[in-house]
Structures are given as C-alpha cells and as structure tokens.
Length: 296
Ligand SMILES: Cc1cc2nc3c(=O)[nH]c(=O)nc-3n(C[C@H](O)[C@H](O)[C@H](O)COP(=O)(O)O)c2cc1C
Image 1 (cartoon, protein in one colour):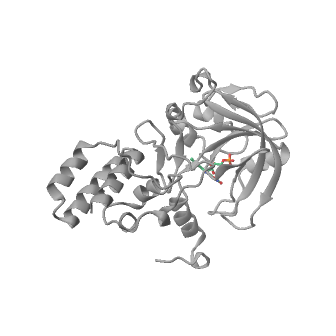
Image 2 (image 1 turned 30 degrees about the vertical axis):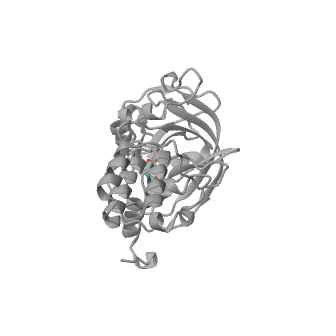
Image 3 (image 1 turned 90 degrees about the vertical axis):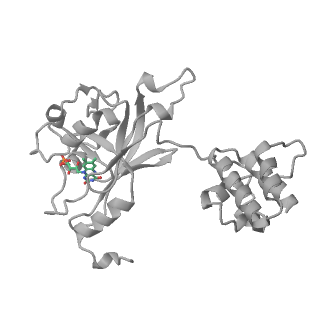
C-alpha cells in the first residue's frame, strides 16, 4: 500500500506518521510566561541535532482538532528559555497526566505532583524527579505552517546538563542499561529501555567493513543467513583466512556426518554460523564458514 500524503486528512497523516516514526524520546518542557506562571508539558517531536553547538529541537504543534496553539509555545514567545526534563519509566504516568489541557495559568507541576527545583541559568524550574535535565536558551522558533497539525520548531541551545549521580560510574560515564528511558510510539503505545531489551551493534570504526558484496558467493547468497548476520560478516576490516589453530568440535561433527552430502553440509554449517553470529561470535562464525568452504 502506498499513501499519498496529500490525499490524507490531518488526523490520518498524524496517525500513520506517528506509528512508524517511533519510538520518539520525550521532552518534558518546563516554561514560564512573562508574569512568571509555570507550565509543564511533554513533547515527543523531539531530538538532538547537533552536539557542538549543543542543539536540541522540539515541536509544540497547532492542535489538529481546532488549530489553537499550546501554552508552551505562547510562553516561549514571551520568555525564550526552557528546561527539558528527560522522562524515565518511574515518572511516565505523571508525565502523561501533565499533558492534560488544563487552562492557562494552571501549574502542571502541582496537577501532576512534581517538585520544582530552581534551575541555575534559566528562569523556568526543573522537575526534581527527572534524572536528566537540560537548561536551554531558545535560539529560534520556526513555524512550519498555519493549519491544524503544523509544527513549531523550538530550536534550543543546551547550556547546562544535570545528571543524577546514580547514573554515573567512577569514570563519570553513563550506564545506558540503568537509565530506564521511555519513548512514545503511535496512539497510546510507549516503550521502555531496560536491560532485557537493549542490545549493542558494533560500530564500524575508522577502518571500513569489507561489505556484503565482498563475501564469497556461497555465503552472500546463503538461504540460511539473514541480512543482520551478513551485516556482521561484512563488517570485518579484511577478508578473514582459515586459522590452522581454529578447532571446533561441533564443526568436526558436521563434517564427519555430512561431508558426503554438500547441500546438507551447507545447511548445517550455515545454521551453526548463524547461531555463532547471533551470539556475536563473528570470528568463530567466519572460521566455521571458511573451513567448510575449503572442504566443499
Ligand atoms: C508523551 C506525550 C508526547 C506528546 N508530544 C507532543 C508533541 O510532540 N507535540 C505536541 O504538540 N503535543 C504533544 N503532546 C500533547 C501535549 O503534551 C498537550 O497538547 C499539552 O496539553 C500541551 O500543553 P500546553 O498547552 O500547556 O503547552 C504529547 C503528549 C504526550 C503525553
């Protein structure tokens, strides 16, 4: 199915885009108006776009329903400063409560039960319960349209970052698995980062990966290896060679039982290599595949 966005209603555009452009991190924005009234609202149209200068952008959009603008946006036109509080799982329900459309002047810190903590270089208060907070100056607000659903890019320079001590180890590094971040998807769906669902992808570093196109034909066109597994094999910096010292009992068994039947042998070897790759044993997988290539 192909959707031509121009033929969709504003609600449909929002629906489909929000379900697939996900998960989105949540900026829990604290702002004030020129009288000093505080506002606190979550925005998942949010991300970082530059680290030097440190720039993050979020977007309070015009309401699709009635094309009105959000208090957060109005406040930022009056006082261009914001604290962006990062949302973790322990405060997700309170954060959602703060998104209710309370009348202007109602303080969502109070409604959602959060504690105000003074910021150090900007006027809006921080959310004490948030484990990471960004004090920001608004550099520019860019309106993306006049109709309901139109975003307003709030381009912010981060001046100070507050991190809860519990997130840092002795080297002042963050343990990514300990920060249970939440993110928004389509509709009412959210996700949460936790030890069980996080995984690592080895970063291709300055050396180039040989590429999937450089893999031997029989590996590249394997019926048993997935795109992710081929991606791991193609990420080595030079074509591996068989190491005479490589010794693997399971491979020996495969060779012993299946050497007479090349098709069965390929299935067994590739399935074994796939298992090794899933366990991130790239070197071993290469050795198994190359050793079998030499036999066949
Ligand atoms: C997790 C979450 C993410 C949201 N993201 C956005 C967003 O990116 N843009 C937006 O305009 N509204 C977003 N909303 C809705 C606003 O939070 C909501 O309209 C809020 O009432 C605005 O408050 P304000 O008028 O006090 O600024 C989101 C709501 C939730 C719960």
